[in-house]
Length: 332
Image (cartoon, rainbow, N blue to C red):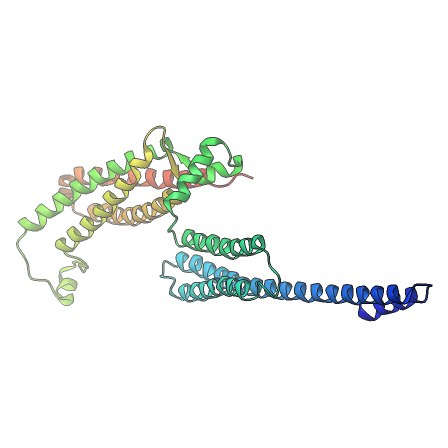
């Protein structure tokens, strides 16, 4: 650039200019060439500065994606995502370090890069915005979605600003959850009745000596895995879980209300897992009643009818949970 300017200046100086005009023109050409070199140097510094910032955030996003994949993988296996926490920590380090270093360089090199006040303000916003969005996204991945975000999405949904294809995936009408809550109440009534009957039976029955495996083989009795008191503890824990889920779903099922799928779908997943376990336990109880003698089977006829009625309610509830989750899928 400088040599080209000098050649241009020499060609012009060959023209018939006075000595004073020649010296003035030559100095202006050199000054302009120096100014262009300084501009190129400043812009090169700015580009290097931005590339460093983007490299930090690129590494943070890569670590976050790997951590999110581990969270999904471990969730399918129903195991805690301990390894994902390490990747999220690495992502947080690179994300916050990149923005912090970017701000430090802006204030340290603002004179060298001749940054204006507007450029400094823009740089601060450029450093803060990705960190805020990344933190919010990680919170949503870990099922810690802020309430203010859900409220904002609900207002956008009410105003009709959300695309039609995303409205059903973000929100559900409260009426769709009313069959779930009614079936859940029916199942809780069955479980309370079964729990009270089993508790009375366990308290009224005197403790007996447990038979050895040899004695059971001689008497033709199957091996007892659990005693009545342990069944009472299992049913009590399951009933508490159902009551907690019902307490969470009942306010969301009010008529005219809008429920967020971020809140509803995890509850339905937990409910579906619980009722699947309950369905297996009820099937085992029905088979146990059917294996009894004729007289005891006639005496337990009402108990068998109650168990089969609860099984029907559990099956209907599981199908309803699947239907609600299918209705929330994005329609292309």
